[in-house]
Length: 195
Image (tube, rainbow, N blue to C red; front, side, top):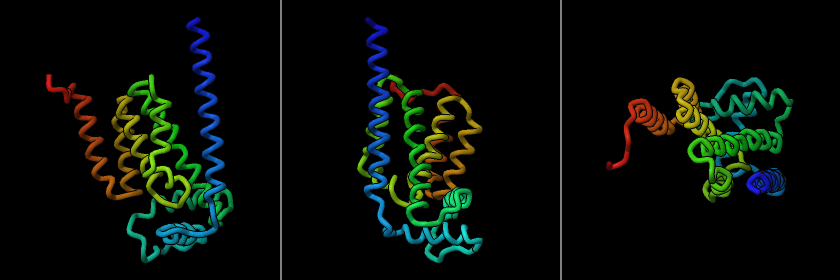
């Protein structure tokens, strides 16, 4: 009976993951337009500069172009530079954050990791960023990888990914300090409980 319940539970989880994957891909194609929104113009222009071999910076770019270099690298591999293609590359890389978040949630508490991942995915302040050329989710993915390595006691790798996140978005210095604090707490057996 317990084995049957676990099998049904795993089948249900698999079905949910499959449905979310289908919804995620359909949402990309439904929401994708050949129009650039807000700061996408700056990011797209910078990526295209790298794709065409121009090592100049867009005058409106306010961050280190690490994200743009990564996206241009994949654009170069697939010989793609259209708005849709660049958005799709960003979409695929950003989608990895779902898996990384799931790993972090499962490491912390495996009981509700799928539900937490769904909550993360559909969070209104995050969801729209999966479908546009922005640095937010890519940066968050690097921070999630860093957090995952903290939880696995691989502090050096955690610092590497936290540092990479700073190269994507400089305001991640705050999260870098948080990762340092988290490592300190975990390595020194500190507790945040009042007891």
